[in-house]
Length: 180
Image 1 (cartoon, rainbow, N blue to C red):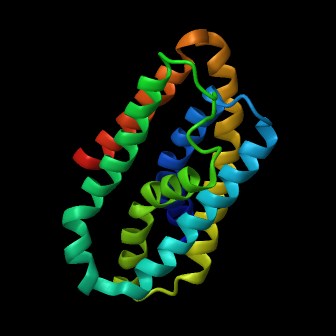
Image 2 (image 1 turned 120 degrees about the vertical axis):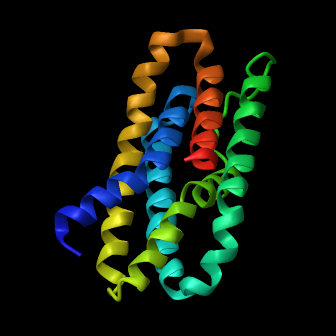
């Protein structure tokens, strides 16, 4: 696999994590740098780790997961997004969807299911996985960190509807995973 192809794949795999990070940047009321670092570490780690796991899992597991992976990711993302929309109309803590460790881990898994399949594809090509996994993880980390800060800028533009927008983004990501 050539370097340009690998970076394009890494960017494509990172888009879900980037969008979730934008959502977090829109709604966070805590330290933006801390939220960005957490998003970068967890999303980058999960993307790289899932690529490795997928490589090891091989094609036997891919037939089972191919049928349910998108549905599982959709349910997780849509559930969190709908909860955000619901809570936007009530007095709440103002936490972003990734400011708690359990939510962050769930989002990490949900956004990295496609990296699992990419790892399986790498295995089927007979390639080694270490370098692609590092690049996938690093690109995701960088874009996730940037996404949190981009979300903050967008949040000022949409004001009181920021949490609703964050929830809609998560539901849209889930729909994209489910139908594309």
